Amino acid sequence: MTDEIAPDVYDLTVAELNGGRYRVFLFDGEVPTLVDAAFADTVDVVADRLDELGVEPERLVLTHGDPDHVGGVAGLAERYDLETWAPEGLELDDHEPTRRYGDGDAVGRFTAVHTPGHADHHHSLVDEDAGVAVLGDAVFGSDARGLPEGGFVLPTAFFSADLARADESLERLLGYEFDVGLVYHGSSVTDGASGTLERFVNFIGKPE
Image 1 (cartoon, helix red, strand yellow):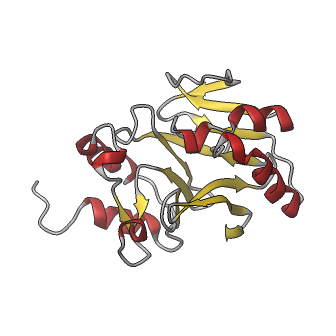
Image 2 (cartoon, rainbow, N blue to C red):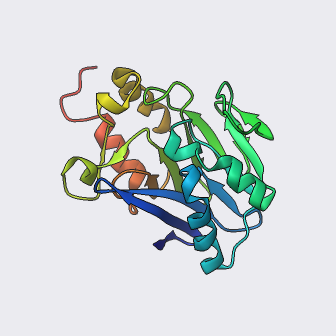
């Protein structure tokens, strides 16, 4: 399944497991860029989705090290001779990234924002010019927890290294404006996403 979520921004769904969708995001443009790599056994599926669009990627950026985000990095990098970017300190078993990045760095069209908690090295990627942010697993779509689409929720403690830190780190995203907030679990928010996130973080009655 391939959905164009914003102009030249695509959700490439590669698998549906246990009721959830697993995906890679493609940003087409001057340097076609994949964000995250899905599983080792979905490399061919990603390639099929790219063939459908007629796009050959040149860059791959990783948000963090969970298997559904990095499993396919070696296979995709080899197939397309990709420039690969990974957060500082993230160790990969089968691939040495071309570049490393940290908080505040420019990563192609994106600004990297360190949003730890789900994972220590987790980064979100914001393209304010396009009005799109890849939030990674800093948040899930609200429907991932049985709520209506259109909002955000935190990953559960089961999926988080430090849930309190995950909650606190969302404040680091509030200085950015983006209309579309892309998530890997549940549905992305495609209208007014930065405002939706701000209301989630600064909820009514939140202590000063």
